Image (cartoon, rainbow, N blue to C red; front, top):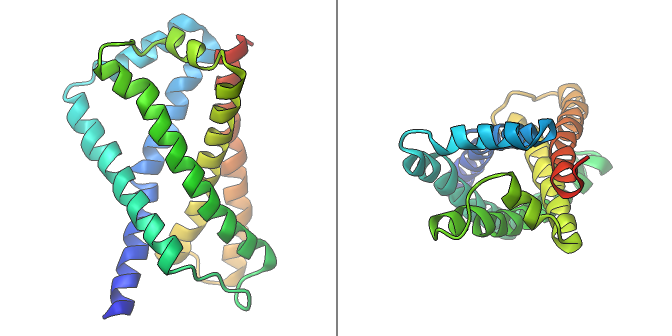
Length: 207
């Protein structure tokens, strides 16, 4: 019974990390990347997202609740089911196992702070979601590097999580397919990290 519950928890955790959280992450990075094309482009893209019908309901059901559930399951798995496997997986994969858990903690802290600085402040009527808001936040060197570490941790956690998702759901079963997927997820990590980092530099330095 315990093994079936563990199996279910791992599958649900990995699924939530891709759908809907992973999809939202990519969409969020792409929308933010409009900042690279100028303040007007970003404000237009952000305004479109803000004007979506039933936005609060969508954010709660598609973003906040899945992230909260994924985080709770992630902490449970990290503490109670820390099954790295030195004999079965390579040295690299075992290191990635530990980095995945470490970046998960950083990602959770980063998301909580980012939501506080943006969505919560908007709800309180203190700020508007626009280019100037992010420019003000990232004008601090300390906050810029906090966001830089947070974004890179988040993109790594997602990209490497794709490997775990594929293994957990039986998509990649052979050692060869898992090795190929390792390189594929590395490319995904580099690609979406570039989008996120480039956006942060634009907000902070206007270049």
